[in-house]
Length: 213
Image (cartoon, rainbow, N blue to C red; front, side):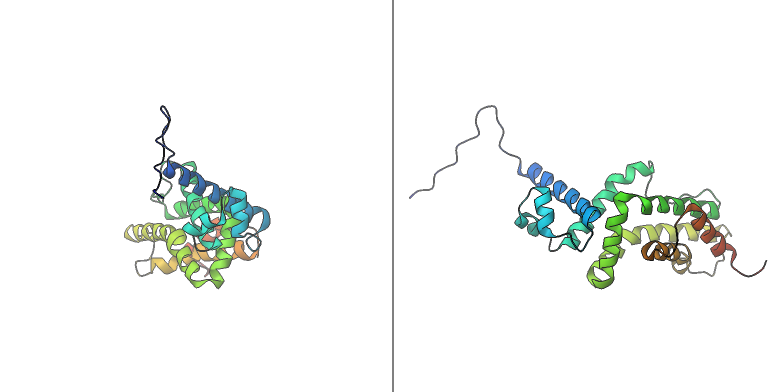
């Protein structure tokens, strides 16, 4: 039996745009994944649940991603990109006012705001926890989410070295951990509150040391 030709689109109507349909589904999947992680937590979030919430078939998700961790990673990156305009016209730059302490404190305060934002907190914790047991995801987490920010710290610390505000012999990659690591540990393990006062103190301790002056 010969194959029948599809009827042409009716006059005045355009053919369905598969690209637009795919983008709509992708956006629905992002939103569903982030919402479910906030509502139910990462362990209880499933591909089936994401599909049902997004109104798509499970096979649609598996066509684009291999696991719920991959879905959440991409959804979180998309959320960060869409939220970037809220941070100002240049969200991916490190301020350089000439005062390294003030600039570090400003960036860390913005980090505190983000870590406390409900939109970011649950997916951030979920990805961080999964990255501990899933080495591949952990590496992707560092490369895609953390490394761009770390590079900004490194660049600003090098500028401070050139300006004579920081010792020339320090390794900026190690030095930035004085600011990033304590904040991350306190946030992840709930060992204490995170606040502007806390991050300001981290900067003061790191730049001036603990020995008497």
